[in-house]
Image (cartoon, rainbow, N blue to C red; front, side, top):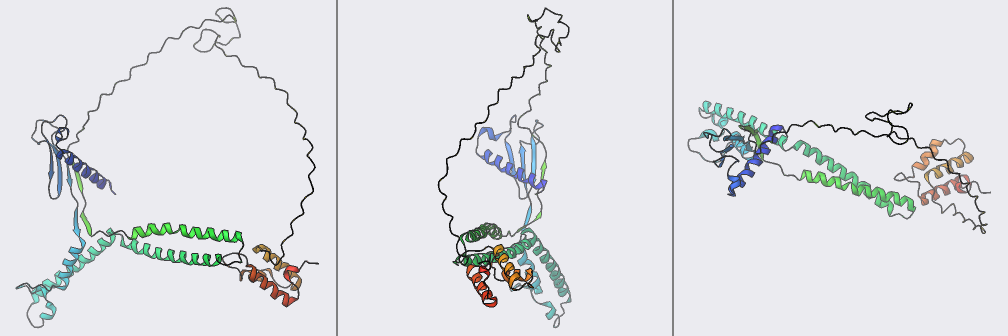
Length: 381
């Protein structure tokens, strides 16, 4: 919003606020301070004028205060209908008006060259005006941005829906461990939170278009600036008088002035009485020796360590699965490269998670049948 439009909104609001207060009939709202005449609110078709009494008053502050020139608008639907009628003709019958017919066809049977020339000129002007009207309507309602936002919203909602479906499908399977399910639930919550961004775009797209297009901007003219409250005269700052300093009497610690040699006299003082003595540092208190730790009571018998779960029932991480296969192929097929082994694992992963327990055990069993050595019992004695 430009400064002129801001000034217009400010004065427009002020004009009607003052006008409604004036209509209330209160004496304080009928006249300006110091004026004998009532306020005047002049409302024309294209202008609003506020005046404080007549302009021929003896008071120089009376007369027009400000004038607001209202903006001009056109109605898009009405004007478009007019242009299209000029271009295509009308079914409405008008006596002695042949401009409503297709004169290019009629000119083959009759001599209507003059009327045809006028009609062609009118069609060309209406076509150009209609094109400009549509461009102004598109620009004022930001229809180009509307199409971009619509395409963006459609793409975002589609991706969000696909992602939620994948996560929900994975959560329904029993093979995932609890930590892996927690990770997937967090991803699903993030997808749900994205819906708030969709709502903002939808509300923006649901905003109705305005059929009114501004063709002339508003203007304001301030004739006289009337100050409602007179400024109070600024008081001059009086110079602050300096208070006379009281003379300090010397203490009993040394004879009366002049002070003994070696004593420093502070500025503005007559003697060294107010000189602060430096405090002596306190002696360090003896450090207490830390108490020796009392012997801890002997602990009872340690509980037996829990047995490790069987390798077939354990949920392996991605790094553990990769490490097991690398060590396995070193023994059964040393020529196998690490990248090829990694591809074997990555092909069986979903959503960036490790291979699920069932496909992992199936892979190990296939390798056992092929090489007669089970990958999970490679180091068993």
